[in-house]
Figure 1 (cartoon, one colour):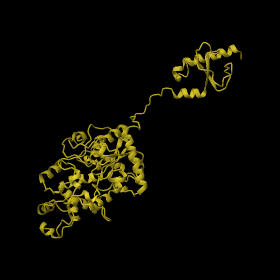
Figure 2: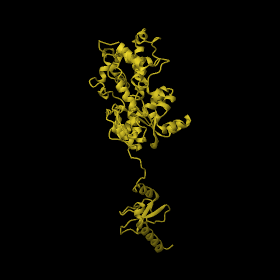
Figure 3: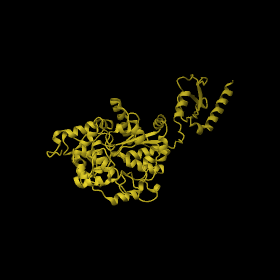
Figure 4: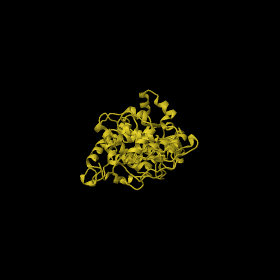
Length: 454
């Protein structure tokens, strides 16, 4: 090939490259570049592995200079990236919420390797797990740790069931749980998984406040009970609450007299394991006027962790409820930071969210079954804390309607040191798994008041 023909070929190639420069990301360069070290002294382009790039310097022998394949690769990486069609919200790992969620997950797995506890699959699968059906997301709910919040939002997003029907009775959930256990576990592992936890000490105070009415057994109110039945409101009846919470705690603390059956008009001794009529429990309340201190409540809690006993779901440990070492939950959320956690997670998973997240439905609401949804129920708002994983703050236990004047710290002030140690032993793994710390001096004998109640 003659020099003239070669120059013509080079010129045509450069023109073609210039016409398509916009499409290939401007691989041409308009500035003068010194001859590459691998050029011949006369800038002979007869080298393999090169193409021509534009150099409009008038003193160049050829219309362009050599461009190596490494230059092409570098130019390609600098090309504008096409817009993604991914519909998921883009949240970078640098997001502080994403960072502490990851840290929680890593800590959980570390503690799981340390203890390797056995899972409680029966309870987890059939009593604690719920689903956002259309978002491939599984939630494990824990009593007194935002479970009412989750169930309310599940009803809203899933389109039911109404509040008059327990969330466990969701038809789609029942169908899912009817699968073989292996298939159910497989489906859960293939979904986005969330667990919400709460500081053990505050969870205990919350249970005592709500289930034991600050330690005073309230009398039976037939009008209120009848209203609950007529309106098919959720929640257990008065007598069911007495049987589930009060009678076992009174029995643990030896507060049921041996001859109680005579006072109540029963033919046989009163048995905590038997379920009695509302009339019997009402007579018990009027006769004994039972009271239960917070320390007595904690003694009962500790007793339920004894061999052969079973803790109530409202204070059972997290492993027994959600099997966190068996199911690797992608998102470990905390009541103490629930607003921030859910804002991030709902954005990532594109789950619909409302302007307010709520904890419990204390106010009944009439209307259409499927219209009784989360944002229509005026309730107590959750604490919007910032607990990235460690520090304990009593402020996370806010005053509530049932007990507006007493802070959480005051509940533990008069608890004997041995009971404190027993409580910590029951929930030690929860403290470690979820990086919860004890209040300063909690296990120090000097931190209790002189007037300790037994």
